[in-house]
Image 1 (tube, helix red, strand yellow):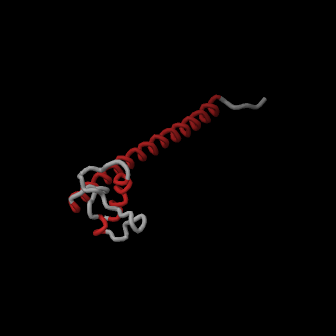
Image 2 (cartoon, one colour):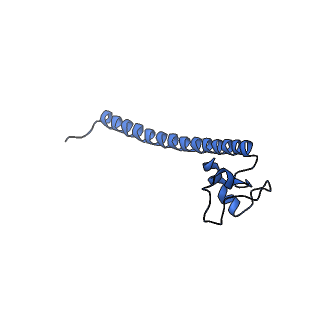
Image 3 (cartoon, helix red, strand yellow):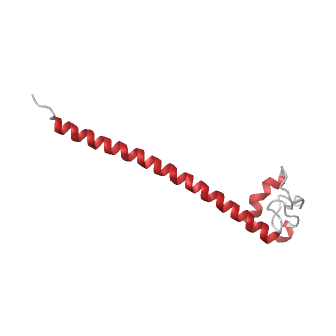
Length: 105
C-alpha cells in the first residue's frame, strides 16, 4: 500500500494556504489601489474646478461668455455653450457643460 505521509500532506496544505493567502492579499491590494485612485481623481477634479474659477471668474458650466473663449463650443449653430452667469450651476445644460468647459480650458 502506497500513500502520502503526514509530512507530505502537511507540506501540500501549507503550500495551498500560502497560495490562498496570496490571492486574498492581492485582492485587498487591488481594492485599496482603486480606492486611492478614486480619491486622487476627486482631488484632481476639485483642483481643476478651483483653477478654472480663478482663471475665468466663473464656475465651469456657468461662464457667461464661454463662446468668446472657445468659438468651437456649440451643439448646433444656435445652441452655444454659454452659461447664464448667475454664479450657480443650475440643473440642466449648465451641469452638462461643467466637464466640457473644464476640458476646453
